[in-house]
Image (cartoon, rainbow, N blue to C red; front, top):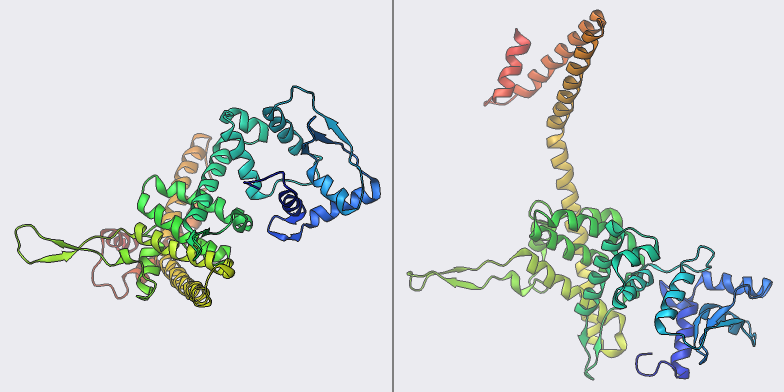
Length: 400
């Protein structure tokens, strides 16, 4: 397609992509099959669009369906003689985004379609208007995700024995729309105050995508509290797959001859190096014909081992989160109760200003409150030798 797009081989390949499932291009897309059935039953309803020189610029999927049905003709509208590629791009985008269009953009194709408009020099305002999206967050999210995926594809490249580069494909991220959008949201929030934690989050979530972890597992990969990679995954990595940057370089101490200490190795750098290992392993397993049997076996073993390590680390992280939630539950409940009392003060003030309130009901509920505070004081001081100021106040209050 890059070297000779108009050749018969390139056009046959394009037709295969038009008929293919965005998630698995070698399989026929159910949406294409439905289009072919519709044309078979009702005929071609909408004309395609062609240049005077014979380039079909809109209606290629319909042409593929007609070809499959062994139809000899396609109805088209012909552009005027003064057509330009900018005209083609604008028309194609407008037609693609029409609501009655039978085949929507796939996730990755939508990102690429937005990128194509950027490359053409269109303003952000015009792009958002064309695609009927908002700049914040949709446009910004699209640009970040595409850059992230393209970078991952580039990082996955491995040199083959014949000197060519083999890597992952954009389509391999087609099913990850929800995960990638959630990653963008969490990353941008964390990056404001903790860039290192955000970088760890990005790399660890990328590994999770590569290892096909589910949404629940992915949500336990966070960047807070030192970062998932540093706190849970790195300590469990065996030497055979541990990033080389995880072994800090030695640093000499000025003025102390012969004394060295380990240098610092940022966790984000380690997390990125580990992600690179998995990216390259995935690229090798996806193109086994380009590598030796030993190389493919080694890559598959790395992916399997990494998946086990990630799942184990996630279980530990999940357990730690639950433990923290249990430990903090009493304080959280007290905080909620304090908020409720604060609202009660405001309500009491408002009731007085309007002429009165139900004193008996208030008194009854205050007695209930006192009984629960007495229970709280007994439980909170049980087994504790040291008593904080808050608990001292509570004990004194219930004894009054």
